[in-house]
Amino acid sequence: MSQATATTCKNCLGSIEDLRSKATCQTCGGIMHKDCPIKEDGKNYCDTCYTIKKEEGESIDFTVPDVISRSYIDTYSYCPYKFYMEYIKGIESEHTIYTRLGVDVHNLVDRACQDSHFGKEEMLKEFHELWQGYEEKLFEDDEQREKMYQRGINSIDNACSLIAEMPEPLSTEENIIFSVGEGLPKVSTTSDRIDKVNGELEISDWKTGAVMVGQKLSSDWQAPLYIYGVRQKYELPIRKFTFYYLQDGKERTFERTSNEDYVCTVRKREYFINLTDVIRKVQSLFSRILKGEFNVPYSSKNMYFNCKMCHLRQKEICQGVELEGWKQPK
Image (cartoon, rainbow, N blue to C red; front, side, top):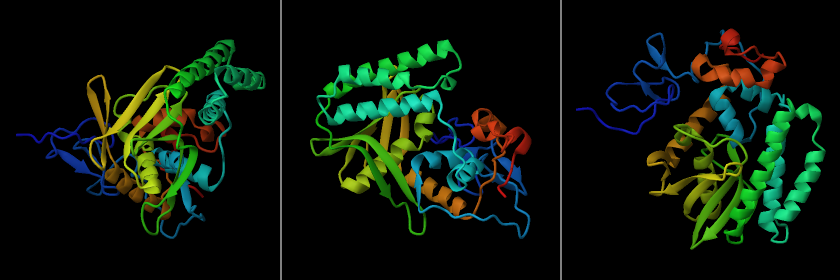
């Protein structure tokens, strides 16, 4: 009889329903379907960990930061080379209309959370002023301009409705730095809003982009790391963490089921996260950073879209996994 489990394959993200037919990554210990790993010298590797062996004696000069932000943990998890070029070498990407709008709406919503007199009318007025200062090069065409303008208006409308139902916040835009293990870098997170309700905490994160769907809800780093960091700081139980997708007026909420476990339910489907598992994965990831593992992972099925949109490719620093899989920093 097969052993039912909610384990997700690290490569294809599909459910592994029989753990007797599984493979384990030699580097990070990630679980995969039997046929999913890359095999080399009789060993199994997940797509992210599979890197070409460095030539003997070859080394790179780098200094690992004492603190690594949650967003760059995401970056390293799908492309260590991009992490190296951005976080260690300082080659930053330029603002797009998506990042610019996201930052501006976040700032407006944060002011509204802190000041009850900064309401919808004031938010819209300031948004219009900001919008007039957006450069033409941010937009591909008039259709995109209109679409993004409406995204901003919808986000403000929905944010105002949400804030009106919330208590006075415990904190907003709070940066929390916490340890995941001795000898490893610390993690930095910034919580958009934290509320204290009946002796427990509720965390809110504002999003202006597309709604997160499917297995990404179980594999994304943000919710578990924010929950863990806030719990470490306040030493109070975290009842729930909610992504508020302001453009569409939708939510994705992770509710506590035990001290370490949370579940997000979407249309009767459940997506689980475990804080202990995520911290162990971050520890493994940080260990690889300390060892100087900054190669482009050979993973055409997972990397194609990331490479296509990457600013390093646009700047001709890297040609992407199709041509430069296993590329190493120099």
